Structures are given as structure tokens and as C-alpha cells.
Length: 350
Ligand code: PMV
Image 1: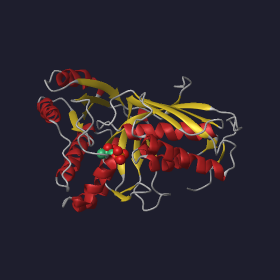
Image 2: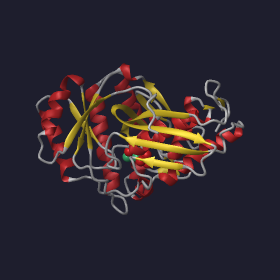
Image 3: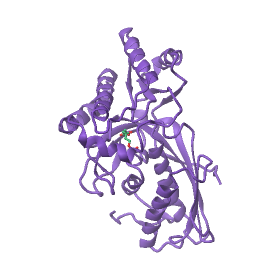
Image 4: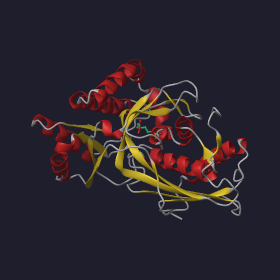
């Protein structure tokens, strides 16, 4: 990581006393998906991606570095043994290593971390992206580091790929690169450029059937169609950027729905096959087609889980949500929309 901005935060206490910091980072929905990695350790994706940040699905994380503490203590969604604690501790170590470079007094301190999602974890709603973004923002601030947006993005990426985008707001692009320095995200357009509605449809709160996303990413290259995907991806990224710039919802919708189906085609044709779709997911897809045939502008997209996002214009959001909520296989829907940057909050979780 470049050390251009790597310096103590003059506004923080930056002494050896514990400093509690809390950040809220929102999840995003990818319009062009990140799938497959060219470097697993650095989490460099095979292709660039584009997403939109979501207002009502978020992770809140409090971090406190305390020199009196013997070891890191991590509580996620109320559980001390969440299964994610080792990955969190590795990420705290990356933050301590950076703090060591600029001789911060808390650089060797252990930390207390409490993190909560306000939505089901591990069901394909990108909880690791918002989680590692909130952790990166809270931990760097709590330890007394001042990092640029680019440096935060690079650091967050090493915790979880999609966290690279989740430290930004609005419409976000994660650049394709062969180096860690070049693989970062930035806001393409702020949230107020264009507000879109997203009806997030939960068809099951269970964890997704596609195993850990690290293992699933590894299967991408085994699909015979993956090479074709990579050959066309930059053209698709450009088309999505143009549709957002021109606020052309019909164009954007077609592109993101086709991208979601292409992405699932890659998963379905990988070895072993990654089958994420549940009957409820398919039911929602058909209902979206039905609504469109009646002139309602709405398009679906989804990640590695079974829960599905339906993008629409704010003027049609109530109608789309009501129609999807009535489907027999739908558990509940969450209404959300485009949102800006992560925020620091004063209500700490510990
Ligand atoms: O961040 P990960 O490793 O959980 O990968 C998730 C990738 C997708 O959600 C499927 C697509 C994306 O770009 O968010």
C-alpha cells in the first residue's frame, strides 16, 4: 500500500488510551458481478465490477483497541464464536501492521469488536462486504490512522473482496488491476445522481447452499463459459456506466438482469456445480417478467444466495413490492434505495 496518506489521524486521541469508534457501512448490489479471483491472497478479482449501495441493509461495527486486553475479542451478531472471528482478527492485524509503520501507540494493542447486521447473514445479501467495510473504517479510525479513500478500499478488499466497494457510496466501480495498488473502488456517481428502488425479496432466511464464497470463487474458471464472460466484460461495464450516466432505466435493467443470469450460468456450469437458486427465487423471476409484460419497469439480479433483488423506479416500488410479497414462496420483502457513503455513528455497540 502506498504510504502517501498513511499518517496518524490528528483529530483522534492517538495516545495509548482506548478509543471506541463505530461505523455503519451499507451493503451493495452488484450490477456487474465480481466472480473469480486472479490472486486469492490479495483478493484481486478476475474482472472489474459495478454496484449500487443500499440504504436499509447495513452492518454496524464498534472497535476499541485496549492495551490492557490480552487478546482480540470479536462478537458478531451476538455470538463470540461466529465462525468469522479468525478472519476478523487477521484483518485487525493488517490494521495494526499499518499503525506500526507510523509508530502509533495503540499499534500493539488488542481490540474488542462488536458487529451486527440488520439483515440475515450468509444468505446472499453481501454481509461480508458491509462487515469488512465497517470493520476497516472503525478499526483504522480507532487505532488513530488516517487513510485516503483509495487506501481504505485496498485495505478493506483484503478482508473481503466486496468490502472494497462497500467503503464507497452511491454507484461504485471496482477497477480491474493486476496489482494490489490498482485494485480499488471509487464512487462513479453519488447517490443523489439517481435514486433507484430495490425490493429485496427474502425467499429463505437460511444460509446459502453455495459453500463459502472463497471456495465458490475458485470454481469460476472451471466453467467452459468463463473465458467468454471475461472477453465481453469490459464492454458490459462500459454499457452499465453509460446507462447510469444517462439514467436510462430500461437499458440498465436489461443489462443487470442479463448479467445476473450469465453469472448464474457460470455457477451452474462450474465443477462442482454451484446451485444457489431455490423455488422461491424462480417464482420471483417469473413474477418480474409478468410485471414487465404489463408495462411495469422492474428487473431482477442476485448474488450467490437464493434471495433476490428487484430493481425498479421509486414511482413503481410500492406496486412491485406488494405484488412480490403476495407470492406463496416469499417470506418477506425489504424496501430500499440508493445511499451514499458509510457513516460514523455515536451509538457504540460496546
Ligand atoms: O465478496 P465475496 O467474496 O462474498 O463475493 C461475492 C461476489 C458476488 O456477490 C456474487 C458479486 C458481487 O460483485 O458482489
